[in-house]
Image (cartoon, rainbow, N blue to C red; front, top):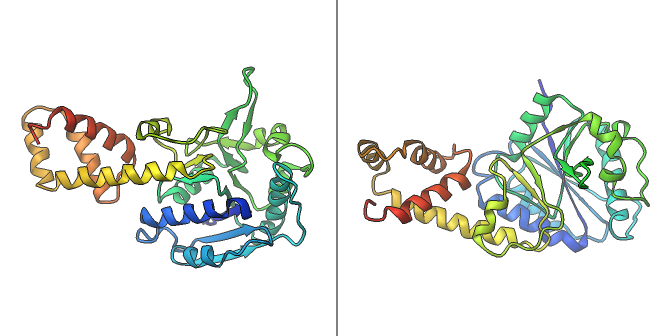
Length: 292
């Protein structure tokens, strides 16, 4: 039997509020109600100056096991040195646990409650030591794997030596990581993307993405909440009698069976691509208000 993926949420004092925002949003979209945290462990990896009692209490409402990890030594010299040091210490701590782990930084945004299940399945299916997103770093086609990735228990043995004082570990070790990594469509990275401002910008998020990196100001959460409220309003509109409406549309040859079927699946918690379905539904509603 495959071992369950452990979530490692890494943060420092400067982005602890983003870690809280992440867990708060995760609970809002129903991670605990869906039972996704059953049998799951989350490790809150933070610097020694962070008070994480609030984070820990929130995590305990969603995950079966909540652990805290603080490196004994500190290397608070800014990015990327502090991040390199944190990753090395986390990797050393994770090795004896014997489980693969998903390294998640606080400036990432979780988009769907099934993110751990989907990444775990993809990791074992592709059977590579590391699972992450391959991103291009130059016009010449040079690639590296996102630091936010799934790693094996012995990550440092796979990656090799990391120069803590050097470039970001995922970049400096790219030539060693790439041959041992599999690409995943479930992680999306747009490096140093400007803040999100309008709902239209949600189109920049890939349909299959479960994790978006990075958003350092929390603006994506605001849009996701606005969009989610809009989804609820549209779903309530369909509550008049969804299935009769679907049948009526089929009879009128409107070819919307698959669209509405997906919306019904979303209401029942089984929809796979809610952003696509709701975007299409919103367009249809605006064009066919007389029918509704």
